[in-house]
Length: 503
Image 1: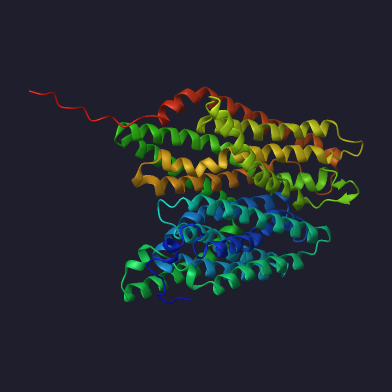
Image 2: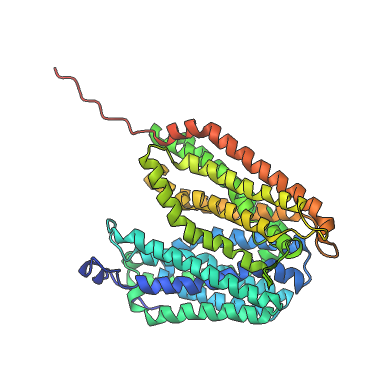
């Protein structure tokens, strides 16, 4: 697995221009099973920590916040480590092995096992997400029109993995069979490894910095990469144990990076690029509010669903994790419909661009929060809220995600100067990590459900959801007011070279 067997170019990519290149199909199925394990932990961690390990809801939310911060924060580092030290193929498989071991450790159902299991799982999942994207994009030439279709299939595979993971997690959650649940996640990750090994040769890296070093440097880089991978596990384990400190550290780091980007932007030349970088910074601040509310799904919102929503729907007991499949279905079905609708509106002269979509996403997630106090107000005598209200909330949140998430990464290529694209992509990922920590803090402000009832906790939930909803709407209004400015900044054109007058 660690031999220098990477190839310079997959000839089948050019030989069969009308077909998917070799490896694209395998990566679709790998994506499904690689996502499955993450879906299980993402949707179950807070419930497992509170119901089985005896964590307080505040402790569980803080741990989940750090979990999200590391998962998103390590993505950029994964691209660097894979491309320059271990190869994307090797790092992906090693990361999946760590995920398998991590899920197996978690199945032991102990607090110590929780920290070590999460540390191993996070090291794997945080690093190997970028590896899949890099392996797929390398299958195509820069101008290959099939790239978009391949990534759409890969995105569909990811959502299918989430659907299977959420569904399985909910099934085991109903009986609180956590050991079986984590072994189920282990099986899914193991299948991803098996597929990778069966298609090992065609998944080789095609053009990375690691391929341009001599054999001695290659072996040295491999050893360094392995050492970094091993060292990350105890570091993350310690930081998980001190979730409060880690959360503060992540926020402080995010603020520092933002100030650094402001400084770089102020000093940057030429003028039109600086204006676009300014637009990027304003949009990033607005997106932080969206992602903070969105990341409540596996934290405070999950506990609200567990304790305050009537989960008996048409005689069927709905598991809390199954509620998150609403998001998956809206993304899969609504994505193409929204794209089609936007195309028709643009053909009729509507101006649907990045600033408008960002503002729209904030209004959608704000409404998603505001419908919950309405549902609480109309709750039954036992205080349990009808399932339709959480359904409506998740649909609105998912529409908001469709408005902001697909264009979030795409706008980097439009707004970032070539030499800063990597840095600005990393900052964009950092926004989601900081938002995850902030979501943990917001969840800690929600009522404590242990030893209480829906009637007693509903007023507290209603107050928090109202504040969040109106806050998101207010930021959406600010984005609307800033829209003319943002459009001018984004559309800044490079100055045309002036012709020298004759004579």
